[in-house]
Image (cartoon, rainbow, N blue to C red; front, side, top):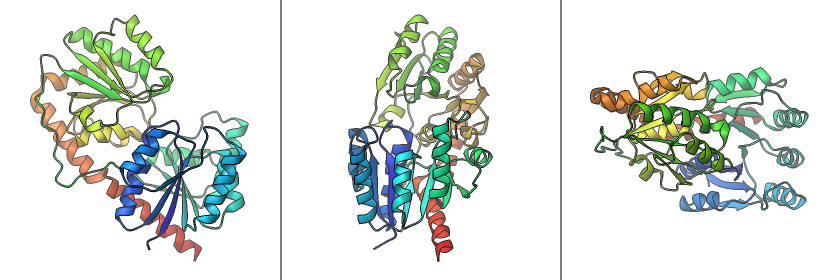
Length: 362
């Protein structure tokens, strides 16, 4: 029996964190670890994803904190004799239950930045988290620096970049690129702080320069109606197709020619790596956030300063106009993703953190 790990992760809002946890847990099982995922709250998409990867999981139930959920978590922690609890979100009630039940090392995996203007509640959550968890993992150097800057009780911190599933022998998708009617795509949760407004501005600039261009957007969320209204107000409704939640992302990547990354402050940018792995060239905003660590302008992508919609539109269209540039950047991006950002590399880095934690406990 391998090292026993309990991952605790909220299933809502469903997005990159849940996809990463599912891939990580599946990879750890392949490497011989004994893994269980504790799904905080209920969301069928997360459960279906875990089941598709043969990852065992238990659901705490409900969609908000409750005494029943707290009791279920305490029973799980007491019954499932773990070596390490791997926490993927700092929720006050789960942390308090963990504090009461703690017998083993806890690791906090920071997928988000600390709040710029913390409330009293968020300060309390940070305080409990720093005392509950033995070490912290950040998904990028940017997140690590922000964590250290905001914390009073500085526990040991490690940086482990996210990774994606990678099949042996994978090669970039060789699509028939359509210069006459290129398709630009993006994938994000439908919330305004993920860059919906920024996407509309860039799409408008691209459409002005290349009227034959088409756009597809994968993702859903609470602000989808506002997004549709803004597209309509800019005359883009006919050229932008909103796909909603997409389960087959490989199919999505096979249908677009250029990926637009417009998030204002992404801790990592998992979709950037996914695009690279499929051979899709990336045009992205430079934001000073974790996503900048993945891209090298002119080598693995083309970049523009955040908010410069005309600049990003120009960069995206360069991929359409210059085939040698498109092929060179796509190949470099693919090679970079394969070398640095696979789920196997991610899991190995996390296993090293586990070993470090356990060696300090003995």
